[in-house]
Image (cartoon, rainbow, N blue to C red):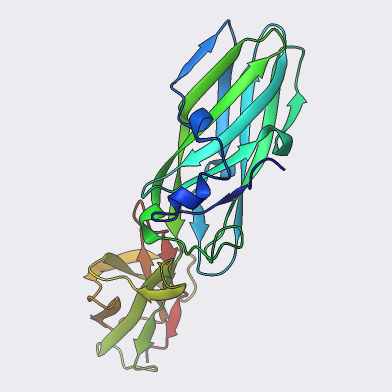
Length: 262
């Protein structure tokens, strides 16, 4: 194996990481020769890569390219993120499958580890959350090649959690219901979940025999991520909070909490 496939989401650990990859290749300018082209690049099935605090997450990367002589190899695939976050896959970790005499799809896996990097003990940094660029270098049998620093972009997000509790229960119709909850997200600096403050969260309701939630009101989380609001009891049903997410934090909805209105 020429380089590790783990991505570190690092800031201060960048100097250690560069010993495992070819920085000169990774930083090469866009370029190429001949008629080779990159047709499609997909990271993690087009979905954000979402990490909690302990579990490693694998993201499949596929690069589809074409050339009149056929595709020889994808030399490397690398992810370049904010906060000096970085990771790379080399050709011996990439499998290319020909779809035709001129077109192939090459795949590899980037593995994100929220607890450290390659056993080195370097902790992840929250600054690594956000939009990443996917760079790649592909060559053809006739020695044509193409390099792109940003063949596509993808998001790496902090996993989030959300709770909701409606009380009292049961409650008389027309009385006040208080709905409380907590919005939290993974903190990669300390490997714990912490409150996500000053965020807009929507309170939703669905009737007991319905499958559809409707918006009730917007609530802003406190500095500690706490949520609290009141509504009037109207009918049996479920209350929940839902968070739309941000570029750095994943969307989430709480389980619904049933209220019995009498």
